[in-house]
Length: 142
Length: 103
Image 1 (cartoon, rainbow over the protein chains, first blue to last red):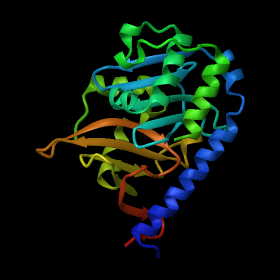
Image 2: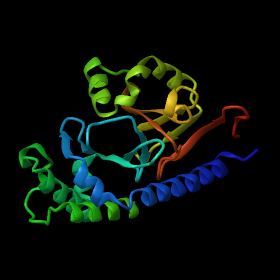
Image 3: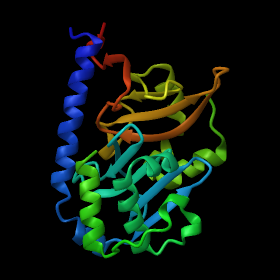
Image 4: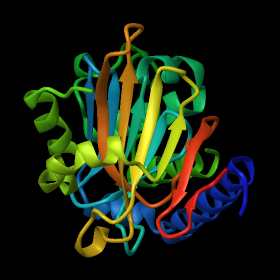
């Protein structure tokens, strides 16, 4: 029987392969964003930022990093949303994350006073294709 | 380990798939198949297979708990997950559903 370190390595490899499958299953993200309304919400008390396509629905939720999660359909792996825990700290630490979510904030027309302060200030393109590309890079770069 | 009613309702709003699994949380915490300590030492992730139904039947029910210095635990979030791995975390326990604990 494998020891815990060997099991952990195997679980990491399985996780990496699964995220690759999610990336592959979401090549048409721009189409998806043009079909499904995108919402961005910040739970200020828990400091969790939720990016949701359509309405929240049955999903499997996977780590992208220790603080970022992706929600996808359990069978098709189509993107349902992203969650960022410790959002304020993450946005300050990772400029690419901040830029992606600034674009999403502009696309969704979410009032800036309902979002982490780090998402204010920069003028970024906000069309569905740009946001889709930005989110794809975010997931791929996990 | 605690969760307030409002906190549970907030989780259900964002993760509607967990709505009917409130009663399974103690089983996950008391008899998990997988436990990770996150990069933040006070956060633990508990996983258990065999709880989900329908399209969730092969997934882990996962409960993330934050512990205070006094040892009191609060449920940070609950969801179903396919992969048992916490990037940067430390695997503390792995029990195969049929083969038992990894040493």
